Image 1 (cartoon, rainbow, N blue to C red):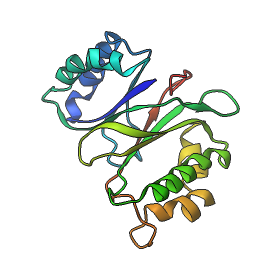
Image 2 (cartoon, rainbow, N blue to C red):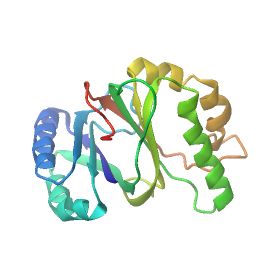
Image 3 (cartoon, rainbow, N blue to C red):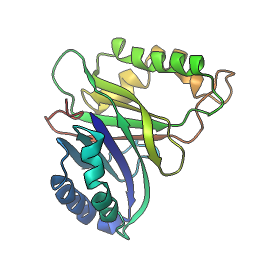
Image 4 (spheres, helix red, strand yellow):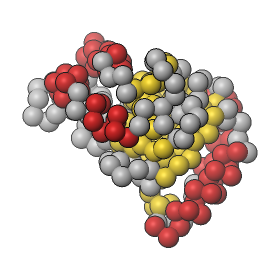
Length: 210
């Protein structure tokens, strides 16, 4: 599977129009799963509109990439962060979540492979401690655009907003284990300070397109 995420900063008065336009455009692609929603309060560098498209293959995306790039050249869109990446999500117990969250991050290029692997293993361990995470996927980025050379995308479905803002962000696995990779005061720091933390409602359907 191949996924494409785009986070759009959009002028306030044009947001409804842009959401409608992008939704319509997404319908014409070969994406097997399409999510185009306004972001929710609490997003950090997460844009005003979150786009998540999942294709059967990278070839399917490439067949639509030029058209979709032209669609996002709208003058009302003032900034775009995003990534393209391969992978398959993992489904936990219970039904699908109602909130989709994506984190774009950039690991420093001088980080050695063993350290990157430990970092990735710790991120993957988080859903085992946090029941509010209903599905997840950690991917290395093939193609990055925006404010930083994004290296990883960490996606989750959460039971609800409270599950993201409470049990996830406040859990000891987060602040006592994983946060050291992000903390500029910690010698284990490997993640650049620019992050895109973005989330939106997804209703009752499968946010990760499994």
